[in-house]
Image (cartoon, rainbow, N blue to C red; front, side, top):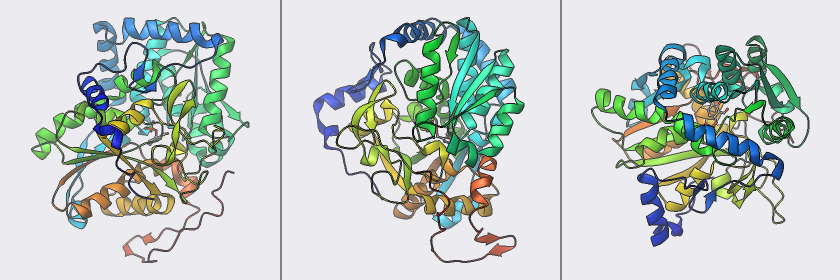
Length: 437
Ligand SMILES: Cc1ncc(COP(=O)(O)O)c(C=O)c1O
């Protein structure tokens, strides 16, 4: 599966006007909408909870005192700024200048911590008694558990039974960090079901519970809140590229599950003269249920309180997805990405399971970085682009580290052995054990 066809809507005056509003920092609008996408479609029982959250975000997020506490934690606890690494071997091989934004070096091993600590501080300000969170790859669960321990709030994490199995190291980490992990056996037993379950739990005690959502998805104000907390990635990257690379990149790549690391990297660069590419999970094929390429193959609909692109059948039934990476295995996507695709400002492509595995191995062997399976998808698209555009400067969001993926990786034979290549050509890795359907 390759690039999404060029979106003709981008040419309409309305979309151009909306893109200008986005570049001017005016979106989402007061109803939480990014043009036709976003908003808040939630049951009556959840309206007060969302209103309380929205008030809190308006009151605290850009308050100087809150910001100074948040920035202090980013520097002293998370370990920011994360490094910008020049990938010398990849650059030589790909015929490009390749730079990596190292979110894998952030505390707990992924970008998720930027959002988790920000929201944990917000939960504290809002007087919450406990925090709930959902998780797919477990990275957000670990980040939430750590952030809650840091601010002194109890934490419960909902996680699909399929993901519990394939991301076992993270389940243990969450428990050790003091979180209670609740296995979700309903629905697709992955991220979508975990979000459903967390929303259900929130309804039971909307005043006492803070729901710490892990990606730029869901009803307003979450997509906005998460974007604001993750934009530190793009802000730092811009600065570091100018300082270390001598200029901004020609192209920027990030993987897209719900879209939080991607929007964090992309948002501060939307006004720059660079190509921006989001990379979804192409899974094992084009058919519905075979991938999680929501923007490439989905249609507009409502999921988790938000109007966005989703993978659904003709009757509007949300479909199960497949990806080798738990963090991309989601049948929706953040509304801002749906909007950016419609405007034509960001291009979304997909990378398959086998390609992601191969990219993961190449990065290990070439640069000594074991990246996450989610992140590997971005490398696939970056390499493709580099081959088509020789000599350009590329920035890749290295969203997280791959230690959590060892249970999955041990199922596939390593094709590259220590001391050199063991070429197995381009045969498939074989995914007979990887299905969760
Ligand atoms: C390392 C890593 N990258 C990317 C993602 C995808 O999430 P998002 O699209 O919100 O960045 C995840 C999700 O768990 C992750 O763990």
